[in-house]
Length: 327
Image (cartoon, rainbow, N blue to C red; front, side, top):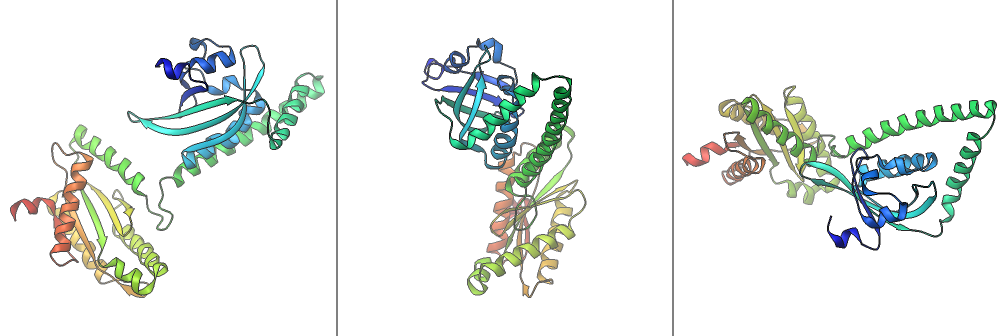
């Protein structure tokens, strides 16, 4: 860690997606009274009271999974001597070298805002319960059981939120992020096991005209119905997603060039002969089949060039990128 960050006038730490501390600056270490080696690799929640752990689970993890950042969160850390230090925390989720990290900065706060009073009251009640007799300890055990139940529910909600981040809300298909992850995984499988696959980029012909003529609600209906049609035509292992706007993509495992163009032509013919609600459309498709040396970007580029060729040749057709070299 460079000296500017290590001595910055605010605390800084970075945690893994599971909450393990990856790095921490000197300012935060001084604030909490720890040595660097005492915190690195430890779970962030090891520096929190039971109450703050619950608050952190309830707000921080679900929010940052859904939005990718948290701004102005008030929470308390516990020093090495057991003292609470209220702080203002900002965090952001980022990808580095294929791994997910949550980077945070904290400023020590002298006062808490009004809505934190409930948290402090709950903390006081919990601390009192720890000091009572056997009867109070039984109540505390019940409280812990309730806490575990809520924690499991929060984990379930977190999984739901994570799933939502991969789904296109209009069509219900996987979104662009979902597709890109699947494409990278399929490429990795190809490099390891030589499992051939093909890629489609599909575009609705003259979609702007549909929106301009009938309005965006009709355009959304056409997109939704086409998504259902593509999904119904796909094989069990095929991956269909919405790439953006009126573009859809598909990954077809175990599909060579000849099979891929045959399937793409069937997609075109079926779309052209199927009423999507009260409206009829055509689609153009660009097809690319993976080859040695391909990356996700090169494969998308080849399919996109093939899609452009389909559009230029009159639309309502499929073109394989390999045939562009011959023309």
